[in-house]
Image: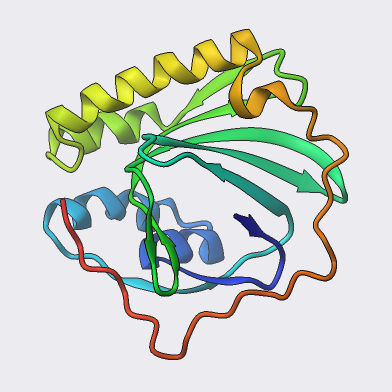
Length: 180
């Protein structure tokens, strides 16, 4: 799956508010809203980078590569529920914790551990999902260290094919139902 500037998707309104305003209270509200089962998605237009997402069926993570001006800027491992195909594309549910990896795989930084702990406390991330995430974290670290899976290939020369049509959300793209 690839995103590039101008592509539309559905995204949480709290995340959109945070990106547009820089107000972290909007981002902080996301987990509380999820726990209270108050969740809205809205259309979001991707900006700035080209993003290549490698999705593996059944995996509790995706491996993402972000390119800035045709240069691999970073790897980004998003821990999430396994994706589901829908009539409008792909649906998943972010499980808050992420891993940012240097382009040459020389270093990794865990991101949003505090959000993950908060989501666990509120029950947004269940005990079962927590075990899956822990296993996925171990799997990803082994993949990076062993240069396996998506981390085996040299993606530095990857370029978006200019002939690809921009995907378009249908006018009636429905927000997926919330299942915690």
